[in-house]
Length: 110
Image (cartoon, rainbow, N blue to C red; front, side):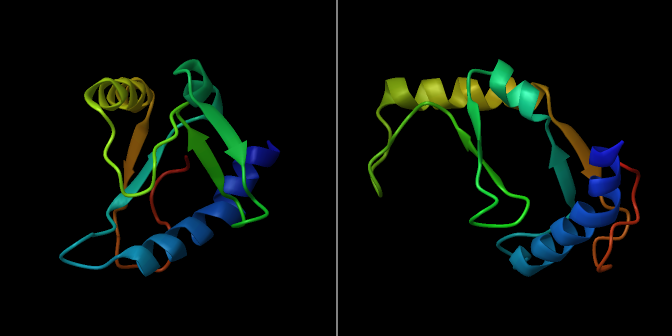
């Protein structure tokens, strides 16, 4: 119950506010959320690393690959990363925001 209340009362307004800050047309446009459970990320072979100390409510997804900054992945690494992402995408639920210009979430509960 606590996690549902956290999402509904605390995290959703924070997510919407952050998404609107990142909204920079025509480069990016906020239209909703893609939600995946941490357990599904772990099932894909990736790990979830808590980083709330860096940003409130944040976690990082580590795919098991370390790339050099500003260097492309070789073809084998690129395939590996792509497959991990595809596996996670299958388990992701998309929630379109019915009112993306509003400052709060008016869509269904996550």
